[in-house]
Image (cartoon, rainbow, N blue to C red; front, side, top):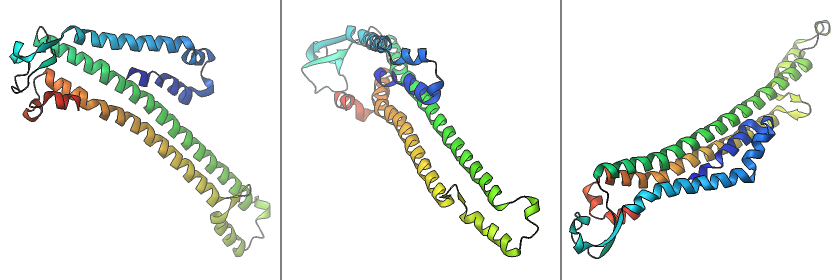
Length: 236
C-alpha cells in the first residue's frame, strides 16, 4: 500500500511543477537515495504494524481453548487466533491500523491526484482561451477593416462578413477543425481525469472491505451471518 503512494510526490512535481521545479528537488525524488529511503520506510511501517499482531497471535487446538471460536462450536482442530490481553488493546491496535494503513494513504493519494487533476484542467482551459483569443483577433483583422476602408461597403459585404463569422478560417485552419481539435483535447482531459478518479476509488474500494471487517471484529459489531463463518468472510 505504501509503495503505491511513494510515487505520488514525484507525479505531483512532474505534472504541477514541471520544468519550473528546482533541479535539486527533481534529482532528490528521482535519485537512488530517495528510492532506498522509501523502501526502508515502507518496510519499517509494515514491520511496525505486523509486530503486535505477530506477538499476540497463538496457534492452539480448539479443545484446549473452546472459547476461541464461540460463534462456531462445530469447528475443531488447530487455529491461528489473536489473543490480546484486553479488548481495549485490540481496539487501539485496530484503530491504529485503520488510520495508518487506510486513511493516511487514501488522503495522500487523493491530495496528489486532486492537484494533478486541477493542473490538467487549468492547462486545458488556458489553451482553449488562448485559441479563442487568437481566432477573435484574426477575425477582427480580416472582417473589420480600418474606418477609412469601410465607407464603400455594401449590404452584401456586411452580410458576407456576418456569414463569414461562421466559416472563418485562421491561418489556413477552419474553425470547424479547431473545434474538432478542442473536442479531442477535451476527451483526452476527460479520460485522464477519469483515470485519476478511478485510481482513488479503486484503492478505497479494494481496501475498504478488509479494513471495515477488521474494525467490526475489533469492536464486536460483526453481524450474525458474518460471525457464523468468521474465517471464510475474513479471507474473502
